[in-house]
Image (cartoon, rainbow, N blue to C red; front, top):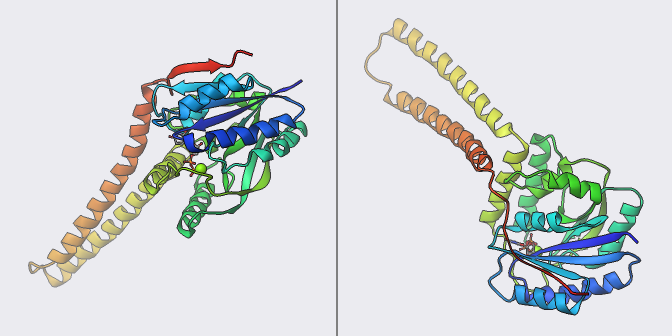
Length: 310
Ligand code: UDP
Ligand code: MG
């Protein structure tokens, strides 16, 4: 029988974990596969780990890993993917926003020969208009500037075949924009549509600050377009400055040069200064990432690993 493992990264999800496991277990019961679930506690400060540990004693299909601190969802997912040994792996959120009941449809596509089956939301409920707008804008600009198209309205909820997981394991970069990495590995990919529900309980760990960071992560790890933009802005500004310089020179030769021109001087200096700082900032973003990458630190540490004795 082929093996399916569901990887669940969780950070402070004590409020929903039991309900999640119950729903997942019901889905497992109806599937003709050897189903397992691997919970990854991403350094939660609530009872998440206690619940996971107790799930592993109650359900022989459950296994749990505890990371040494909060490393972020991307690292937690990676820890899960590194630890599994299955023919297919499903990554799903613990907060029941991704319905476990969709897993059989993902498996169906896997049986049809696809290596990556991602779940795409056909509607976003319980999210503000602003969040919808910003995420749409992000996907659109990603599509424009990067060579790796990231599927729209797609979270991390997806199924990966064994070879897709093996491929993903080889990508050890620290800047882990998982949606991009999933797309980057290639193979046969397809989508399954579903309705995204509002969180069952607890609160989202994403605020606009973290989302902005994720967006910068996504752009800088999959595109060098901002560097090129900085270059072209620099080129444009120099051309304009050069033309303006000629104009000033000609004017001075024809009309003489009474001491004036403070406003124009100031404008030009400020403009060029601004462009330079912006370009430096962009270079800094990439340089900083290069620095973090060059340290080659591990992506996470495991504190505890519980398998059920069964
Ligand atoms: N998560 C995690 N580590 C973190 C933040 C989140 O493992 O540092 C988990 C979280 O428990 C949940 C999933 O990642 O299972 C998605 O998080 P959340 O629901 O906060 O994000 P959203 O659904 O709003 O995108
Ligand atoms: Mg959520």
